[in-house]
Image 1 (cartoon, rainbow, N blue to C red):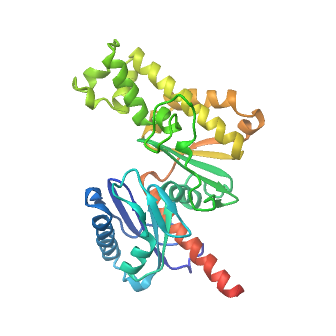
Image 2: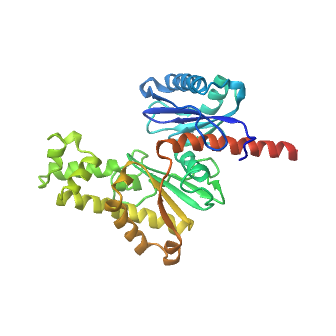
Image 3: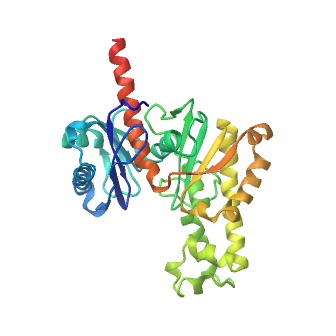
Length: 333
């Protein structure tokens, strides 16, 4: 990307927030509009909120839409990048086969591109963050669920329908808990923050001796992964046991990815990764025992660098890439 490249409007749509920014080719955010996603209002209400956020982001950067080259949208769920359709999203009720790209394109009167939010975050880390200049890597976010993006030869692996990279839904245990995707034993049902909180609540309800509940104000519904972490830091044996169990399953998933893709780097972000060595060190040990030795020796584990901005920066980078690809194609024709 050169300094001659035009500006891009990046949009990161989430189940709870919309982040929109005018972004230059060096990854500098010229504005930052953060708003709440009105998810309960369905597609129509959310799309209107996106358009309103876009207008505020442009105003914040003192930029007219005419100065923007394209719009990149990162969205949660199964997003077909070629067709521009968001098939479904676990975080957006009522969304089914929504032609989000075309709707945004029509609403903003500007060329738009759609990409899955985790794939967008991977691109953000590739162009502007921890994986800058690393052509073979995997981005993983471990938080409420587990998402990921796979970059091969500097390009996000999209698959034939744009649905590749749903790493959170590989089966880790065929007897594991049911997942909202319809499968059971998915990686995120065993190794995410939600999974950790659920198993902690279950153990408390069966009478386990632990301080976790007291740290949640004595209310079982307030037990979260963060509560478990706090208890572990105070020496609670059950909390430490549950984190080790989560680490084990996280490590199994990492080993699968290492054996399949042989990446040179795995970038790890998301709220649960803030546990640091308490979670990640035993996970890496499990991965090292289960992955091919040479493949494991070749991989580096690094923390994500962009935080909450990875998705919006990656959505913009995706739009930049697609505009350049179309320009090259046009010249070739």
